[in-house]
Image (tube, rainbow, N blue to C red):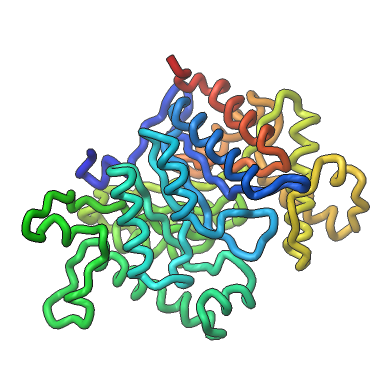
Length: 366
């Protein structure tokens, strides 16, 4: 089991991929499908990702969105851990202001016990939902306070993960279990290892904080593309070596969908874009079928949104997607690309990752 945090953070590129490739899963639910269907697809994709040499598989926290069944990342990750042996599993991310830090330390300590040495804890400060749902999650309507307190919440969480509150601290006698306290208890044989922490963001706040703390950084290029280069520059400029990393390490989330022909790829991303139109206009629902999207009467404003949204979705044939990913990596200098394929059907998503793996010549199962 790895003991050096940097070894767990820095991935390995395979085949002709310029950097390590990973997967971000929103556990999307299409019209006519169930959450059970979506979770079965997640198992199929994580097995493929492990077999083909993808670096890690993260699950994102979202709430009150019918088409996204990833409200409980820790629960889903436990399910995926039972179906895998090697691939890193993590949150992309847990929205820390929605939770007590002790609860997250306990959840991810449990995951670490289930899958030793292959769990990542990615943290964000956004709610992962609308304001009313965030208020219900946090039991308060003072939402800005939660985001503003993020550095303090992060520090508290890391203290619980390391079990190192100083003497005299109100939490000095409180322990996150499973966790390091079991290694130092009489008769203890538990490893003191804990998951590496990543900071996630779509603006400069978490970029600067990750750099200042010497932590790895994950940027949400898939929905904040205009901020990608400025945020990565800020992260690198702010970076201070730490016990975790001696140099910056940044991955970016990328919307990418490959299909066997370009027309089919366009049909699939149009359906995903219609889903985003509905979400952004207060009408969240299940991911529509391509047929529904083709028949939908987009308003001029909606058409503008779709064009803008799909301009940042790398889609087409496998070769076209590979070329787009290569170009994006060169433009941003990202150390890792985390791909998310949003589509109505699980078979389409699975095929996309298979095609991309083939395009880069990633390892094939023996």
